[in-house]
Image (cartoon, rainbow, N blue to C red):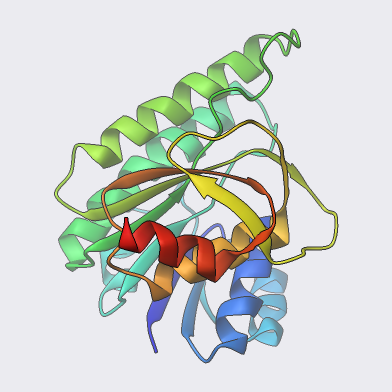
Length: 218
């Protein structure tokens, strides 16, 4: 089983991911800011790791990551504004990538954004900044020598997960339950041969593990 360090573990996708990894006997190190989040993450099966992505430094974060088999970055500003987006989705991602490299953690999974998100919907300056920051984050990670995967889910929903997805390098835009994004991340943890690639993700009819296994054979 793998040791997985999750940045953004207390978020909506992160909590699903913690539970699903723990249920499959993976060791989960869950970065969180507030004490009550640590208790909740522990109850889900994680080992809580206290830290603020906007206040920590690369040496501290690398020390917390050291010994992990993979880092999953699923942190996000959650619509809290341009400055917070820049700090978390932008500088925070760069910090986490640098920390993983320093810690010797080769595998890095990033939850990004589907390119068609918000198109022709007049989403405003904040959303345009969000999409710009997410693309820059993708570029930053892809330029490294890590065994990275960039996962670009469609519109996230809190609908119950089905465990079934459509995944590929270029697919039609659609919705995806957060639980199924987590299931796909679990499959990526368990299929490390899928590496240095971008995967778009929506709801579909193929079990997540099977969809990722197919990409591994491609």
